[in-house]
Amino acid sequence: MSLENYRAMRQMSADTGAERAALLAAFRTWDERNRRLLDQSFEPVAWHASSPKSEYSVLKEIEIKLIDELTADKAPLLGSVADEKARNLQSLLDSLAIYEISSANAAPAEGHKESEGALTMFLVHGRDTAAREVVRRFLERVTGSIVVVLADQPGKGQTIIEKLETHLGRAAFVVVLMTVDDEGRLRGESDLRLRARQNVVFELGYAIGKLGRDRVCVLYEDGVELPSDYYGVQFIPFAGGWHLPLVAELKAAGINADANLALE
Image (cartoon, rainbow, N blue to C red; front, top):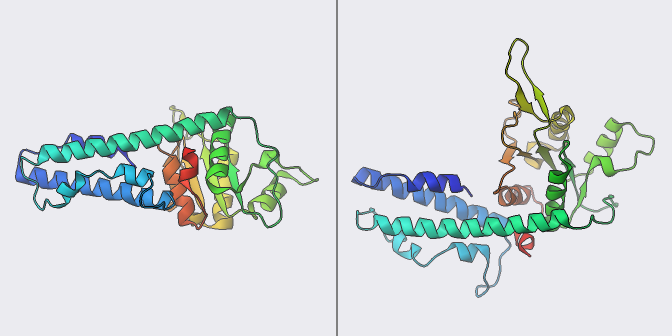
């Protein structure tokens, strides 16, 4: 769900017929994308129960659906509907952020070890351990799965690459957290670029080769340099709105993920 797209849409002019048609098309595209994402992210509830999906919908949209051509007198109505929907989206994202903060401050769960037959997910991370714990606890919450972090697993006489092969090979899905940990540049250049740790980039490539691109999702911190060769992998900005897009990717991969649980 993109509040940035909402802001850009609200800045569009509606003076001429062509401008109003473009505005209506932009609204419907934005609205439909939000609906699809909510449908993918939240489990169905009873018709009389409140849910993020029902709260996103507003009665005024019935009037908008009846509009084939946005007239000058209806343009303000379209704007008010968009504003109300954006407020609902922001409220939802704020609720998820509250859960994120409370989870980060909670006592660590007892162990993060794999058990035979249990669904596991693998979390690749850099040096930002606080961000790692936020993502790990969110994944545990919405999926009920075991989230494996390589550093937490016993060595059993294995090398690091052997541990990686063992635990990543059992995972149903891999989330790669690319935080700004390093700086680097091309030879001959002077400007440094923000980069993730080399082990994170290596494990990203290994995960793609092991599980396939459809079972790997990257959360990236703003400003970090993204590897250009990994076309087709889902990259999600690790900012205020990362929760629902990540849930949608999990569900698309067949993982039973329920974003309603993140709101408890």
